[in-house]
Image (cartoon, rainbow, N blue to C red):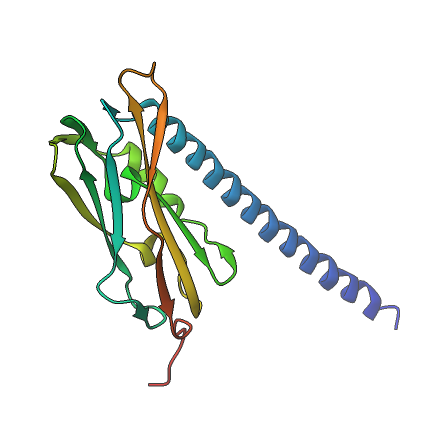
Length: 192
């Protein structure tokens, strides 16, 4: 009996160490994600488009409103200049140009850390968004956010601008709220 006890303690101790390492890895991943999010937000705030007036609107749509679990969910996002002056827009990837918020069946859905890392890679191009014109792009929401659980997801997009004559005051334009429904959990296995 005494010979068995040290082995049991060793197994329990190793199991606890494994759990601690797993927990430490998750904490490190969370801290890294928070660091990238903070860097991205600071970069976005420092490089907000300067506009004469904030007369813009944002519309977010999908081709359909119901998806199966694991199916790609593509959203089209359109920024329209409704009458402000011509405005220069630097064109980051669509997922970084806008602030995208997704609320799922379990609350706010975290985005992938790679979304924030891409902001610092590559060159930035731009264009003038003239009065009455719009700027459209598409984004794979299901690649940026975990939307694999069945339920309803509410998606909202916003964009911040600086007003030219208001001493750099920032203004936020917010889109409509898009609701999509995922009808089943994403498949994780199958029999061949």
